[in-house]
Length: 168
Image (cartoon, rainbow, N blue to C red):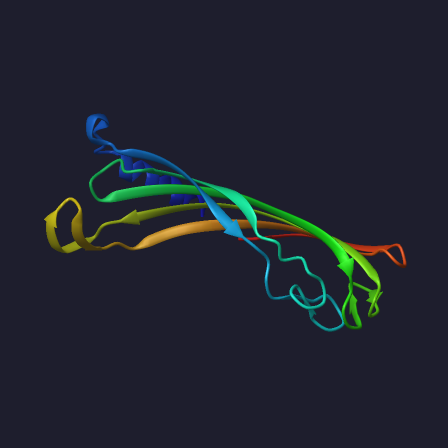
């Protein structure tokens, strides 16, 4: 996979012209929050009903793109999201071998990091009236890594479950 990426970068840079090579660094804020369920053994624990770990967080989002030729664009993006909370558990469930009963005190945290890289090749432009009004078809090849770390603790029983996972 790395060989293909390096080959793509090398081929894309052969006709690069530094005066016309636009590079763009963009940053922004993402208002992220957890939703849905988590499960490890037992039933599904709902982030909105069982544990209230859904507070909105302001997360910086960084993106960098480079267009070494008129038809090739390479992009890199990154974000880091963390949230934590505590409260009283609603329901009866098991998570990672830890039993949570209705009314148990809980605390939890989730950390998510992501890095993505992609390359697109503008293969066909059937419509172009100006630089700002263009329709193009561009195959995209990319890779995104997610790192997720979770902790859920039954404070009442002083038992904790930690997970650290990665996905590509």
